[in-house]
Structures are given as structure tokens and as C-alpha cells.
Image: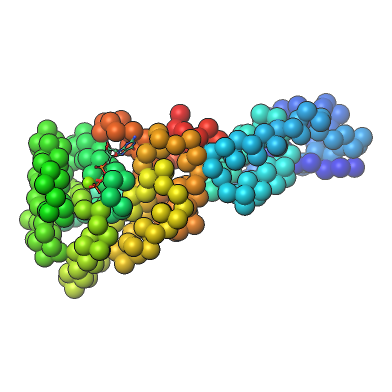
Length: 317
Ligand SMILES: Nc1nc2c(ncn2[C@@H]2O[C@H](COP(=O)(O)OP(=O)(O)OP(=O)(O)O)[C@@H](O)[C@H]2O)c(=O)[nH]1
Ligand SMILES: [Mg+2]
């Protein structure tokens, strides 16, 4: 007798899938509730009936889709193997792949704003020039303001003409404060003055050397005041960049110890898997996903379904 395991949302779903895959003659041996709430049934096939040939064709389909969205050979091989192991075939193979892939990326906790803390939440965005740091910060400012939070913006990009004008145009309609800091002590002072704000979002210049210097000094100021957790830094990566470029940025900004990553420009590629896999390998849990320029619309939390969509469809739904 051959034993196959089939997973479903609940017992009825698992049984219906088992029947579809192995026919009415399949003998249900056991069922087991999984830690994630799903149910797995073990079915014995007296006639050693294998899944239909056409059903097995779904596994090369999963492989082809994953190749198209930029998955590495390793992730493709492990996903196909694990999908095969679930016994899922046909459309169910894609369901199984979605579940596995959605959970393959580490997700950063949502930044928490506490009403009881006297200091604002400080989030800084670093990354290569042009990856979308300012745009991401603006999107987050819009979201927080819509949620009734008071936001302060501060830029370390004091040198570049136009950089603060751009931030000013973002700050004004949101009634957000805007400050320019040219070094760490100015930045620390701005943050100290921002006690009435729920969040202070720090924009940087995209020049790793000066950004790292300023943020490292700021971290030292915070640490001296025992405020080591006072700032969270995110590394912003464009989904259009290759692994090498992303690796260089991880290296360049390692000293500021980014706590997570933001992936931008997901609308500009059909192969977002490279960036998704990269962030997890670089131990940068994903904090946000961005798929366009619209400030009010194109910022998303990386939920499991969204990650699965990116791996399997190449874009967010
Ligand atoms: N298509 C698309 N464009 C984006 C996205 N995020 C940002 N952009 C665009 O990318 C360009 C650069 O964005 P910025 O936010 O200025 O990037 P930055 O990292 O602040 O750039 P520097 O300050 O010059 O280092 C702008 O034209 C943005 O509109 C995104 O998710 N999708
Ligand atoms: Mg910028």
C-alpha cells in the first residue's frame, strides 16, 4: 500500500483534495491537525494508484513560473521538492507553493508607536542614490498622518539643493514638521525637540560614507543616553537592482545596523524574487514593499499572501 499525505484548510477540505487526487477508492488512514491550523490526511492507495500524468505536469509549471519571477535555482529546487512531498497536484500545487513561498521570507514587525512613551519613534531610511528613500518616507508620513499620528520629517541631505524643497512639499500638506540636520548632534537635537511628534522620519542623502558617519554618531549619542533602541534604520533596496548592487549596499551600510529592508520599484520588474530572497539571506526582515510612485497608495506591509503573489505572479495583486 502506498501512503500519501494531503493537506487542506480543514478536514473536509483535505478529504476533498485527497478524493480529487487519488479517487474515491483512497482509504483515509489518519488525519492530523497542523500547528498552523491546517489539516493533513494520510491516505493509503491499495491499488498503488499514482497521481494522473497530467497532474504531475503541474510541478514543471511551478518551476517555470518561479524561474520567470527570478527565483534562485536553490529555492526552485527546494520548493518543487516540498510541493511534490505534499502530494498536491494541479492547481493545488500552486496553492502549496504559495504557502511555502509566502512563509520563506522573514517579515519585520510593524513599527510600533506607543502613546505612553515620551519620545517619538525614529525611523531612518538609508540606501543607494535614487532607490526611493524619500518617496518611501513620504508614503509612510502620509499613512501615519491618515492614522491620526503627528509626524516630523528631518533630512540629513542638507547639501543638495532641491532635496529639502521636495521634503517641504511633502511636509506642508501633512502639517508635519521639517528640519534639516547637517550632522549627528543636530539630528539628536531635532529628535529631542520632537517630543510632541509620534514619529520622526529621517531621510538621508544616498551617499553611504556621510550617511553612515552621521547615523553611527547618532547611534553613539543614543547609546550614551541609554537610548539604544530609540532609532530603527531600514535599508531601502530597489527590486530592479541586481544581487551584486544590493550586496554592496548591505556592506556599505552595515555599520548602521539596519533592522530591516524596504523593497521599492516592484512595479518596474517582473522578477522580484531576487530582492525578496536577497533580503532574507542578508538577514534583513522585510518591513515594507513599494510598487509605484503614488504616496497614498503604493506602500504595503509584506503579508504572506503578498509575498506569495510576488513569487508566483511577479507583482502584487
Ligand atoms: N516606479 C516606481 N518609482 C519609484 C518608487 N519609489 C520611488 N520611485 C521613484 O524613484 C525616483 C527616486 O526616488 P527618491 O525617493 O527621490 O529616491 P531617493 O533614494 O530619495 O533618491 P536620492 O535622495 O537621490 O538618493 C523618483 O522618480 C521616484 O518617484 C516605486 O516604488 N516605484
Ligand atoms: Mg532622497
